[in-house]
Each structure stands twice: as structure tokens, then as C-alpha cells.
Amino acid sequence: MAAPLEKRIILADYGKPDSHTLSVYEAGGGYSALKKALISEKDKWTPDAIINEVKASNLRGRGGAGFPTGLKWSFVPRNTGKPTYVVCNADESEPGTFKDRVILEDLPHSIIEGMILAGLALESGQGYIYLRGEFYKGWQRVDAAIQEAYAKGYLGENILGSGKTFHLATYRGAGAYICGEETALLESLEGRRGHPRLKPPFPAVKGLYGSPTTVNNVETFAAIPHIINNGGDWFKKLGIGNEKSGGTKLFSVSGHVMKPGVYEVPMGISLIDFINETAGGIRPGKELKAVIPGGSSTPVMTRQEAMRAKLDYESMAEIGTFLGSGGMIVLDSSTDMVQLTKRLADFYAHESCGQCTPCREGSKWIADIIDRLIDGNAVEEDLTTLLSFTKNMGNGTTICPFADANVMGVVPIVEKFYDEFLYYLEKGKSGEGK
Amino acid sequence: MRAVENYTFSAKAEERFKKLETQFPERESLVLWALHLVQEDAGYIPPSAISYVAERVGVSRSHVQGVISFYAMFHDKPMGKFHLQVCVNASCWLAGSDELEKTIENHLRIRPGETTPDGLFTYNRQGECLASCGTAPVVQVNADYHESMTPQKLETLIEQLKRNS
Image (cartoon, rainbow over all chains, first blue to last red; front, side, top):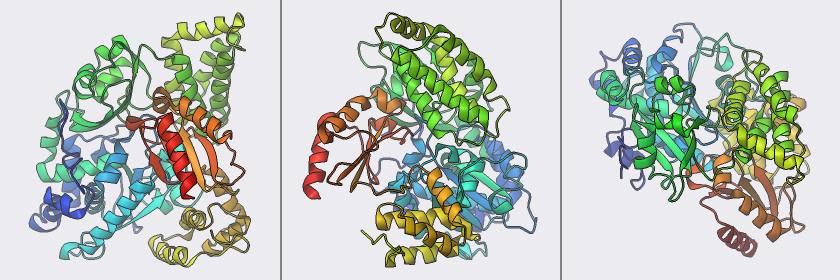
């Protein structure tokens, strides 16, 4: 059942019994886009035509960065003499984000169909789905779906008699947030420690095994069959805001709302309407205090900022934050922002891969300062030190954006709720916190 | 549990490994997969498995060791039969994960990283978000998620696990 304001495209079958199986997926129109592209409209759907349709849809990468998917695909060179790889990033681990898990566990065939279509667009014969190791049930469901798709002739050699080939296999990570960064993911998929690579070269040119590669998010692939079936223009116009943010988007909302969960809504709807109507509103007797809009690495919004926000890439940027992964954490007036910061700071300190000094040391420093503050041992300079050294943590001083993500997740909380940090400082001085 | 001295794949792991060998053009990719198979067999990565995996995949022992130490899910020491992990990231904390941590510490008398003397339970705080924020707080027991947890439900679960072991 769709919630208020929901527009279910990707989630159309979510909640139906056995939605993870091939028969339910096919009954809802599954694999019809593939059949069009391979059989009934095969002359129309050249690789360029598929890429152009995806470009026209204004679908943007749903993992968090929001890079236009069609454009990303167009960077992948063809006829290089090397194989081309299609990789699905199912390492969902951005705190507050749990939308891909729903697709992996309950709608795995939509990912598979999207990846085969990507394979046609990029003339690739091999795909991999990289799942975070913790997603054991998701892996079982995806693995079973792949076997069903092979048995039905959607995967393998000579798909549906078309002469095209696409193989698909799974890979399991083993507990490392950094492997959601696409070059770290590729390192991991090659059997090594998940250390991000210097870019350029970008994966489009030199990705998996040194070959042209596209890495896209679970939700991104799941949107592709609908774009091929209904057209890029149709998808773009599902969004009700500005044209650059096309389609519907999955949002996973948690924290102090009455109905946490995963919802699919048109891009561009008002954030506060989404919280109040779709997610059931704030808990009774409490008021909205702040919103982390798109996973813990997106800058926190105050209540005032949240009141005027719209759920699309551009209006989030205007407020100085990001739509990110759509992993929204809603905070009410009872939230202790210093304790919240500790949870995030500890997480980043633990997950820094350790390659670059500013990130490895900086993330530890942030966590140490927040710990001192909570333990009542901090001095006033600690907070100014934190706000000073964090300016040198990201900003191109590191190989990947992890340090930037850490700073964006933590520093705006300190800046926007500074009084609460000072309160802990005072409590420590008086000996109360010790 | 599979013998940990002179570890070799079980028949089931061997079969899966043979299939995996056909799926990846470069053998190095098999390192993580092989370690997952070892851990499913033995419950952890015993020292003898390091040379075994290195040999089967065709990489150095230090490469395998480096991979084990990088990824949080690979354990180089024996674990309790049930590995309890309480997610303590933002959304689970907002939903009361502190109380779940206390429940485990009071009920099983172990701290994070420790195993009960009977070898049944190992307890860890899981700082990495488990993507169960809509059904927070979550406790992962081995591969399974137990969602929308309360201290009461967690106590019942622990007692059930004790009885069924």
C-alpha cells in the first residue's frame, strides 16, 4: 500500500507476497523492457539509443553523488579490445540509508534487468553485484534471482535467442564502509584491501581488472527498465520540481517519525510534507529540531532550513546540503546533539581506511575531542581546534571523499548547535560531567 | 565445526569454490570469497587456513593476512557460537540501542569484544550502520537481523539461543 504522496514505480511490487521471485516480477511487467530491447524493438535499441534514453530521463546516481547516469555511461569507451564490466554497488552502508536493502531483498529482479540493459548499452558481457557482507539475506535473494534468470534464458549466452550474452555473478564484501566508494569497491572486488584509487583514470576507462567499467547504485539500475519501457521523458516528468532532478526517488526515513520506512516519492516534493504526511509526522508532544537529509555525510539542516527544503538535488544544494542517498534521519526536540555527534564521529574514526594522513588522523582527532567533551575533560580550545583542523581534512588533501564526508557530517552539527557543545564544556568545568 | 588444524575446504565449500573459479577472470578476486567459505566452515579463519587460501587462490600469505585484518567481518580468533552485534550508529541509538548494550552486559556478564566462558556468546558493538534504521534498533546474531528490538525481546532471544544450543 502506497503511503500519502507516494508514487510507486520501482516499489510497485513492494509488499506483495513473494515479490522477490521471477513469477511475481514478470506478472508486474518485469523483463518486458529487456524483451523490447532485444526482440520486439531490437532495431530501435542500439547501444547509443539506450544511453540517450537514460540521458533524457535525467536519472542521477542514486548512491548519493547524484551524477547523471546517462552521462556516466557515455564516458565508457567501446571497442577497446578489452572486456567492459557492469558493476552494481550494493554496499549500502551510509548511516541512515536502508533503501537498497529493500530492493535487494524484495525486488532483486529489477536490478538484474537493469544491469542486463546496461550491458546492452555498454556492449558488456559480464556484470557483478557487490553486496556488503552483512546483507546475507539480500545476497541469498539476489543469488536465487540470478539462478532463476539464467534458467529462464534472461542471463547467459544468446539471451532469448538474440545472440547477446550477459553473465552475472555476486561478490560479498566483509564489513568496510569505504567499499561503497566505487574505486575501493573495485579494489575489494579484485580481492584486496578496500583502498580507494587515485582518479583519474576513472573507472569508466580503467576500472575492474584495468578495463572499462561502470559502477552504479542498486536503485539506479532498478529504474532503468522503467525508463526503457516508458521513455526518458516520462521518467523525467515524474519529478515535480525542476527538470534536472528527474523521476521518483526512494527515501529511507528513520529517527523520530511515527512511520519510519522506505518510501518512493516524486522528486521535488516538500521535505516537511514528506515528514508529516508520508512518514506520519513527528512523535506526539515533540517538535522538529533538525533533519539529516541524505545519510550521515550530508550536512544537518536546522528546523528552519528543513521547513523550506524540497526533495531534489538543486534545492538541497541551495540550503548548503545534499540530497545524498535519501537516507533521512529526523530529529525531534529531545535529541542530544553532542551524543549524536559521538555516534557519527566514532563511526568515521573506525571506518577511515587509513591510506591518507589527514583522514586517518583527523577522523580520530574528531572522535577524541567529542569523547573528551562528553567525559568532562575538554577545554575551550578543543572546540576551536576541531573547527580549525577539519578545514584541512578534505578539500583535495586525500585520495577519496571520505574525509569530506566525515567533516560534512560532523562540523555543521557543531556549528549549528554550538550552544549544546558549550553546555557540555561548562558541565565539565563544574565537574558535573566527570 | 570443521577441524582447524591443517584446514581444507569442506565438500560443500569446495563445490562452491569450483563454481566461483569460473566466474572471475582473475584469481585474486577469489580471496574474499575463499575467506567467506572458510568462515562458514570453521566459524573463524584459523591460522592454517591462511596458507591454504593463499595456495588455492595463488596469492601470498601476507596478501591474505592483509585482507583479513582490513575487513571487520573476518575473525582470526574463535568466536562464540552466537555472535551478537548491537548496532550503535545514529538511528539505532535514537531508538534505544544503549539499553540493548546494557541488557547484554548485565545478562551475559561480558563486555564488547568478549566471549562468555561457555563459548556460547560473543558480543560486539557494531559501529557500522546495518541499514535497519526503519526497524531500529537492530541486533545481528550471526547472519540474521533481529529488528525493532527491545531489552525484553533481547533477553527472550538470548534465553532461546541458550536453550537451543
